[in-house]
Length: 201
Image (cartoon, rainbow, N blue to C red):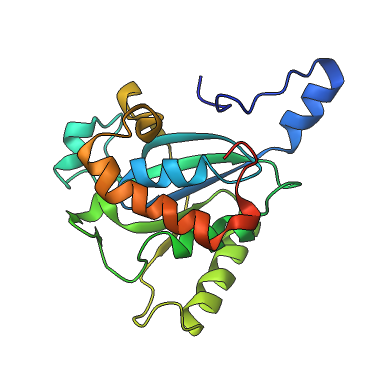
């Protein structure tokens, strides 16, 4: 339902479509409120879809209300479907490190709780290796003054969030949280990653 973004779908048929779908990969990232993460990565070139959801906990089929309790163990995440021929996992992580604060434990700004933790849930051993190397490189740089506390863990079951969370910023740009929190993140993304912005943006 949410695989392709509006304005991004190119009609392909038969073998060409199958080849395109076969090479698509997924990245699952937690960086605070999933509305923020979704909005940023929807604007990254090579991204074919972003789904907001929950993962990392033990409670099956969690609801948003349960997530907000901070007791499920789940994190709010965005699952990103991307074409590695257009954007690499390394580049996705570069955007990840710069569009949230990975040094604050279980917190992003005023959003506090384990559900808002910084996390990379890897899909395979290759992603694990890339994520660990990227974290070490970024931690050794002068990007952040404090140590990075981002969790790097294998992806357990991913649960899609309720429909009203999907495509949230695009459908609610005037909402207070969107204008005060998400819009500045997008401005930073557009400023720092001009070379990676999707063409329609």
